[in-house]
Length: 395
Ligand SMILES: Cc1cc2nc3c(=O)[nH]c(=O)nc-3n(C[C@H](O)[C@H](O)[C@H](O)COP(=O)(O)OP(=O)(O)OC[C@H]3O[C@@H](n4cnc5c(N)ncnc54)[C@H](O)[C@@H]3O)c2cc1C
Image 1 (tube, rainbow, N blue to C red):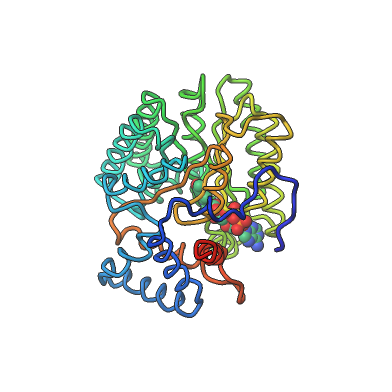
Image 2 (cartoon, protein in one colour; image 1 turned 90 degrees about the horizontal axis):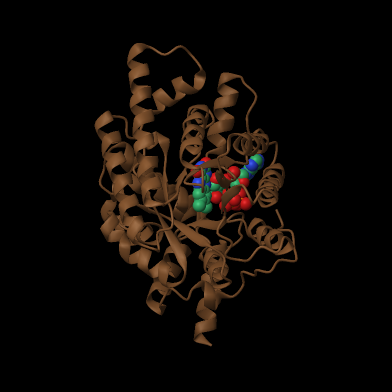
């Protein structure tokens, strides 16, 4: 869809600001990676091979680590990622360390993830370039349990025990964030897991968000019911006296949502069109600004219009660019031209910075490669911006 135009105080076409954090060598490196990803055939072949390698447990880390992993991830450990955190911080862009290990299923692994998340909080407390942490509830509980909790079915005794364990585990993480004064963004997940996540997040918001938002919920605006959910939550929070922390995204895994709805024969929770999602997304931004005395929020998006619209709404209401309740956020390696231009104008900006062992980050890297592929002969935006900056540097 053709982006709409708006009178916005922020522009994204200054590539000198957008790529100030990359020296010529880094820029050339990114050029080659995005050039390769710009080829649908090559991306198709390599992502299929990577998917196959994951299935048969064939090692591909040696190929991913010096290439796509370097562009989209901070490192294999927190310590390895700190160099990127510093580099972003030097350009006034915060980092949100995202422990990207997906699909774990055992209590031992969930306990390990809890420890890792609490370690991130302690590092964030000391590091001004890490303004907030993030987590997925599915990283500390099984999908099976979350689905059962969300279904409203009667729980078996062992499920009741696991549910209690999950509650305590999540509470310990939120407590650590609260003690450190560092907020935590809780990611939104599939709609059949989300009711359990909603209940957990809301209970911790009520406990920890009395003075400021520490626990942040996420709403996916590709769901047609989430704007009403957000409005309702603001009303509830005002009555009960806790602040709303909200990350606003459009939503991932659209095909998975539609397919499950079709397979199981229930109406899809997804908006009827991209335009409807866009409209709901921008309405959620407006709602947040209208309730800025009560809502702290993060616009998690690579959509240029939405970022410009938010900047426009802020200006319209006379809010300063670095208003403490408002954050813009993009994924590391994606839309740098937006993140760094926003930061240069004084807006609060952060990047999700995934890290973890390469083999566990492969599903994430495959998603990034697919998203950055040229669409119907159109050059990927990242790639075209890199070309523009290279031409500018050559003079
Ligand atoms: C900082 C950050 C945090 C994130 N956290 C989460 C999270 O917690 N949970 C999560 O699910 N995702 C999360 N995402 C991913 C996000 O939901 C989007 O998938 C991604 O950002 C693309 O949307 P966009 O707004 O950037 O860009 P756009 O390119 O403008 O929008 C693409 C999105 O529009 C929607 N869409 C596309 N086609 C249709 C259609 N036919 N009908 C209806 N809707 C359509 C889909 O949501 C698609 O992802 C996060 C993204 C960022 C940047």
